[in-house]
Image (cartoon, rainbow, N blue to C red):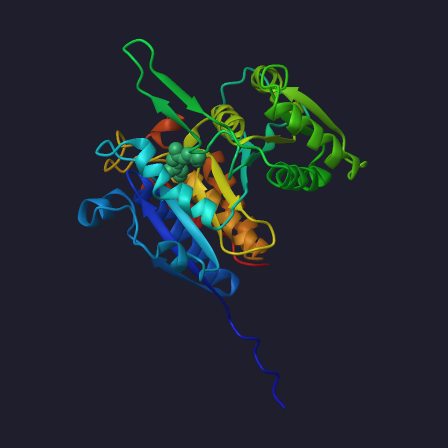
Length: 360
Ligand code: GGG
């Protein structure tokens, strides 16, 4: 009997390039995904979904009514950016990206920070033997980003706006659990709050952190206020390994981390419901309308996000090959203008595709 070939691994990925520079960087990410799939023996069916502000111009909404149901059938989601000067930012965000994150309950927003070789970061000196390489675990479905609250017109000068944060035991516990799990392989966990000022929500977070920490006695951990974390992230960022923070604090600290890494154009993110699919992968940067159409956006954040997507599909070898290609291209000095270089988006994409090494 001849040995029968195992069936080709095949994954369905919904690609939502979105607005601004999103389509430009996601196009490079798709080229990288196709190349690495052909080298590593799997097929990726990449279905482009033209949702976002362009869709809004034609249909009066950011995505179709059945969009969230459509997405559930995919193995993975690859997202570009959302936002356009034509529409209010809160409208575009709350009618595209946020509904997707919430409908799929993608409660972990994992944002790695790394200062690559060949990239001039803003830090004067990283001590020998240390490296800037940490993860921000951002709570992604509740916290400060809710629609709870409202505005009261009042008399002139007396207007009032209330914005209420929401912290549930389940929501807080599960994101901290994820952080402690990650820290097992990486070292110190930092739980970020501001419990001296936010006496209800953040003291609650601290209590939940104590409880989760007790289940992980092998993990070294600390509590830190967000202002102190911002300071230490500039002063000695190499001390951090895994930070877990609320939706707002995680959003802010991961942008600070992107600055430490040399450019927000390099920063990736994964929106995860661990153990479930589909998850969503997107560069941290927004739509950057000022750069759109010029062919100079940095595609590395989108391509690094594609590497995280591959890891999530169980194609870790391919994911590592994409990371190695990023390291080589940055080290060789092929940099877009955000990193002080002159390379164009497509040139960096070409180099990344070329730099992917076949499976050993
Ligand atoms: N690719 C990311 C993107 O388009 N971000 C827009 C944004 O403002 N996101 C807010 C968030 O991540 O919560």
